[in-house]
Image (cartoon, rainbow, N blue to C red; front, side, top):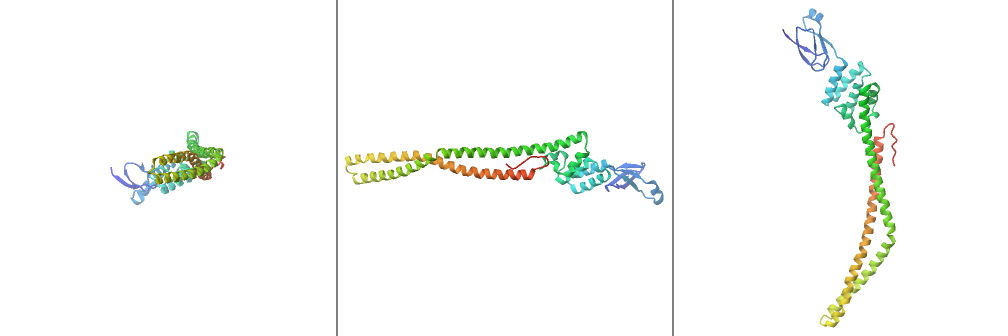
Length: 278
């Protein structure tokens, strides 16, 4: 028994074959290789003929896809479709090449619905039974994910809008008190300054005379009272000012959220969806 050195006519792989046989299968692409006896009789050389089945070509194409050699895989898929234009796996293989994905299951991670791709629609056209259900499930998974993302955008916008309404209502309800408080703060500040001046005048000018020093104590107490009163009023105005700042931030967040929502709708809108920018 001798070992023949052959070349696969389909994938050009080097084969080692037993010379006692008249046919072999390529261990790389599955092509059946047949000994050409007539050619041997004429030339004394070993020649082989082989016709790759669509299944073996598909297997080779998907091996290239797993290796991320999408260009080579696409070439094999085209050969499959030349022989069998209704082969759904070949169309799905082309879609994998287009999306740079390695497995059919990975298609459910696609950024956009599969129905926007012509290869997917052709695969759905020719797939039957469990294969068709599997392909439909992949697209349904993507659509469900996008619907959930859409709802998240809408919920974010609704939450911001509700907080804006609540903040605006607070500002409206407390506007008069805020204005009165600002006026009181000015008045109490003036009174505080006067009390401080009186206290300093009496303490410095009459520090050696105890009775007059005692008289200055109300001025000191008045200063403390005014400071406490003003700080109490200021807390209200501080809260009001903070709410005004918060309202400005919310309006900015709302604008950004609506812009993100618009981009999401424009990017992911697909046939059959009723998405619209709110």
